[in-house]
Image 1 (cartoon, rainbow, N blue to C red):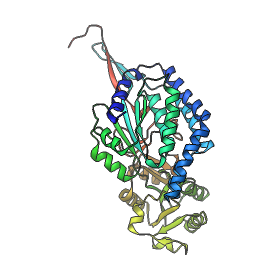
Image 2: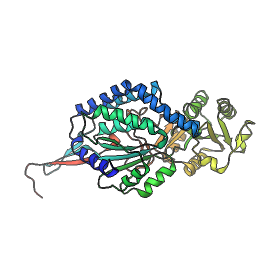
Image 3: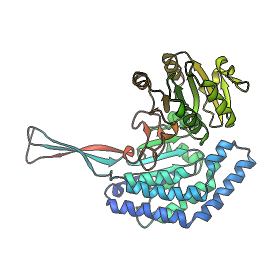
Image 4: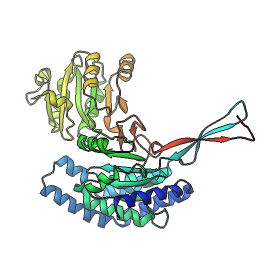
Length: 408
């Protein structure tokens, strides 16, 4: 089918998706979970084709990490479908109710957005995440993944399609595969209610420039962490290493570290990073802490490495750290390690990001970790959502007005 035919079918599907019983949505999610496990070997075989192509094309290790599926990750996707199913019902729920002086009963009801288009790079798991959340939230979704995951994306879609075709209306979940389809899709505002680009700055910019429908961008994560002078030394190194090295190729990994010059263990922090295989690029004061530190350029403080690299700056004060973050933030995740409540409060009140983290790793800015079951991505926009988008964030509300003969 052409892009417009896919969009038309998705729009048609929305008329029945909203009114489906919740039990039917849960049945579809369970069917996907079972199918993923049943077709695991086929999925891994297709993923291997993408990985071989990635190696042949000399893609970065971070990119290959994002592309890789394993037995464990497929089982995790199946579990995610069940976790999403277990979330409280969102479609059709009444979130507010009050009675006006004239006796009118006013209710606010949660409803789907309609048709969501999602364009993403690298990670084939997004096919399953997006489908599961769309089903739970009553939306139709049209997915477009990157060419580097072509075989994986197609197989995952085939598995999902087979699992839901007798449960949900045709067009509930669709896949497009070419750049021309994307160009066409961005014009179809009469059928598509929201476009969600998830990837690098070039993709985000392209979608913003060409989309004729609202866009919620899931942009880069240039995540900062500030270590104040009074930070608890027993948690500093473990948190920093987790944030930077546990999975460096993801958007909530730590990219830039700010150390207050009064923190007494700065040298140990830099040593721990280097011993963990992280390339440290730092200011002059950072360079004085270890001979392996590379001089940081101004570009380093604006770089999302997605790799075992980090920019470091020694600051004289909390204010200097806040100013630095304000200048370089991508509004994704910012963290502070400190004990003084006044310092923490000032940090939180001075910065704008989709998640602000206190005395914990930046890696917790994640839909699953925040209790959403999964995420469509982490929005760095403010309208319609800010931060991880779960099923609830993929809905809106409408008014129901109930009377008994009132006129105005």
